[in-house]
Image (cartoon, one colour):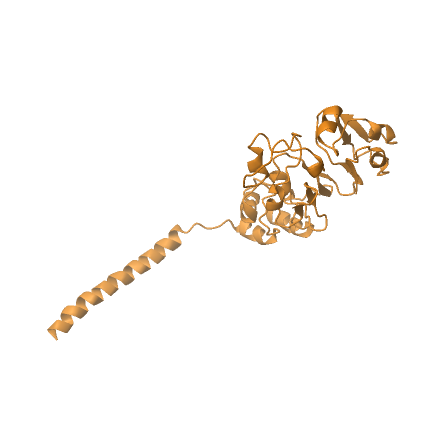
Amino acid sequence: MEIFKAIMIPTGLLFGIAALFAVLLSALGKLMQVKGDEKAEQIAPLLAGANCGGCGYPGCSGFAAALAAGKATVEACAATSSENKIKIAEILGASVTESAPTRVVVCCHGGNDSLDKYEYMGYGDCRSMELLAGGRKVCAWGCLGMGSCTDACHYHACEVGEKGYSEINEALCVGCGACIRACPKKIIKRIPKDAKVYVACSSRDKGKDVRAICKRGCIACGACQRACPSGAITVIDNLAVIDYSKCTGCGLCHEKCPVKCIIAL
């Protein structure tokens, strides 16, 4: 009996102390708990949920927190539906400014028709290749074709095709802008949704220099500018530029372009 008491009393004390610490830790946990922002918690389920980073924040939860803190506007997320944007605006007590719909295009169709200055044997994507002498293309603006945009796209809408340059699948693209942010050459751009043509070149080199390194590059010949009946296209700094507020979509610039760097949509 004495042995039993000698064992059970210390054991009971230990269990009692353990239980006391458990209660104390639970109470402290509740007191020290960091409460999430209620607005952010309401907003997060309404976002697209792709965590694409197109808004410039680390995922949808980061964007929700930024919205709740007043550091971002809901228009920054192109992937979220208009209906959900309105709901988010109501939570924030704000209004949604509807912007004109856009589409994403790659302003370079050089690819295999554009000369390389070296054969890249390394591992990685366009951003890592860019570190080596600005990339493999002789053209300083040319698509490097290593798929940084493809890796960034959570909707599988961006892909480097057999022609050696990145292409956007309009049917899958939600316009989030993740590919735009990922491209080190900054040649992926937005144009109006209803645009009928765009310039698939970003080179600012003189025409004779472009002709020597790329079969698809703008040579600043001005044929498109002369053909446009509405004055919507102008050669600026050796590159054809379209003013979509004037463009009627007639397609004459595409027809007259000798190198076919103006693409009809």
